Length: 161
Image (cartoon, rainbow, N blue to C red; front, side):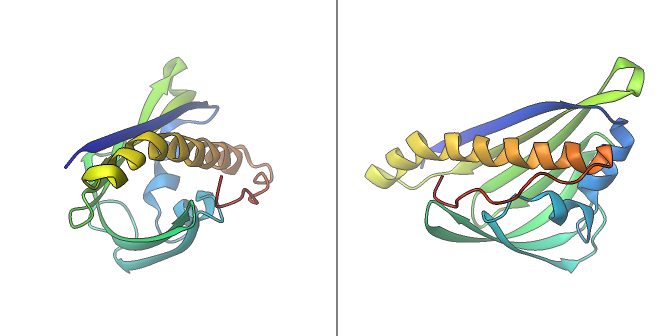
């Protein structure tokens, strides 16, 4: 079985602790920045704040429905938040790096995922990273808007993009 890696980063004009707090809040703030129509459902099963949270996520990407049950950990509290679905072979990491003496930060969303074998796996390796980067760029845009106090950008991108 092969793997794919996809990531996107953005500098956000907000204090790193404020940005991290929004990412770690799986009841309100984190679901609010997930781009629709890709993310069709987010349901907290346990916890809701950082490590120990268990969240069910449903996605619609390129016409395919996917369901994940992610367990959240904080390998570096205040800096690195990780969501892992061992059954699906998917791990997504949110890294918040302070910049300019803590006045701004760089946020990176990175996913490592197992792919299927054969032709389908090869196609996933070709197409999935680009689609994931597009989704992450939108998510980072919405995160930046949420901490700036301005209205969140439109959330109408096509699920087949």
